[in-house]
Length: 393
Ligand code: PLP
Image (cartoon, rainbow, N blue to C red; front, side):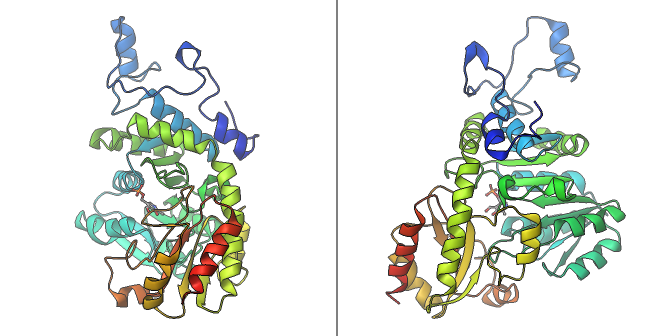
């Protein structure tokens, strides 16, 4: 079914679920079967050759995973989608499927830590040329892209300082040199931003985060043109980074409330950012929905909401972070993000623990920075909680 004329709330519920499942089930069954039996050898042969629809072996395709793939495909308005065991599975499979020895990728200094590690360690060891630009320096990015490259890899907003890059502008530059544009859309979610509409060729999500929404399953998804998705799928079915059907079920189930959750998280994050911005104990607030944020104009142009994640720095440095965070009653002090419950932590302990203080400074990450992923709790309660914890400083 074509969902392009439906809104996101409708698409989240019905994507991949418009037909009844076996026995008239209206919710997708979790098909744990590893393999699929055939009585007719010719039918089996045709499915195995890809000439007829059907399932052969769950490392390749699985009916429950198919529902998840159809749902994200509908939400990103893509031709095709394929799912992975984790977000990093989606990212590494995509990069290794598209980049072979001698090819070149242009990306950002501020990508997610695991992605950075691929750029800094693994891809160069396979003789892939990697150029990482200052994340918001669009002129530098355009100049590097114009030298010729095979992949332009973007992430926006970035982790943890919520920097914003102009997808449309960089996709235009990339297409002039026939490069494939890949965007990690995890922070924005398909409710707030659709990179394919802005000219990207492939979109990735860590489905572990907002898509799942409950911190109880890990997964990754890739969407885009049928040709490019097939290329990555063929790499994934052989290296085996396939998602388990139970995880696919949980993520697809979580996605049914995606729009409801994201609308609330967008609104709450903005209120919390505004509250913190005026607070005497807070030195900096990073949220693309604040007009003072350097990426506000681009974010306003390419996003329909500014997302559920913000970060802020305390005036008193890391000593204050140590005192402040344990006082919060309504957050989990933990890694990860995008859940129904609020989650907070200092990037020096979570996403950027492996960097030195000097390297964090170079990326503009203060030691007193706290990343705060806003849950679906009532925002008045969250603000009260933040206020009482700040008052202890
Ligand atoms: N992309 C972004 C923006 C992330 O924040 C993360 C994880 O935090 C990933 C990718 C990796 O996802 P996963 O942990 O599901 O492998």
